[in-house]
Image (cartoon, rainbow, N blue to C red):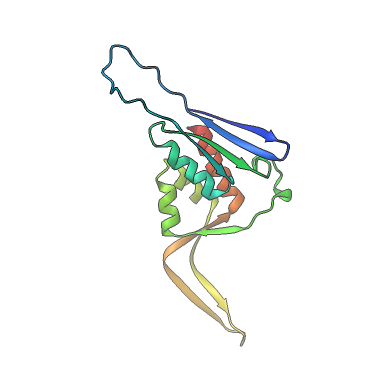
Length: 154
């Protein structure tokens, strides 16, 4: 599988993952059905778009995926110039990441584990609310970078 980052138009970033089909061995027994590679364009290289790309690429080379993003590659932008905000991933979010080998561990390494929250009330008192299962909080851009790096590894 080949994955490259390239500029499509001056302000659009195209992340192109081109699947390399294996040469058929003439001596092997193959089905007569031809596998069709479906072309998929994902608009937005945020965490959801990049995770979708991961899931589609795991489907036995059925998809050729192009990811389009208005902003520059976040791995090349300095931290001070990023537009970002924190995300908290619960059990379902971490479960989605765990399907990609090594991604859950990478994200946990970038995250702060939250086992509760403190509420500051108008009367000046605080109230602690603990959670049964922790939330993992991290910067949205750091999550996107972790997803991009995993795409390049594959």
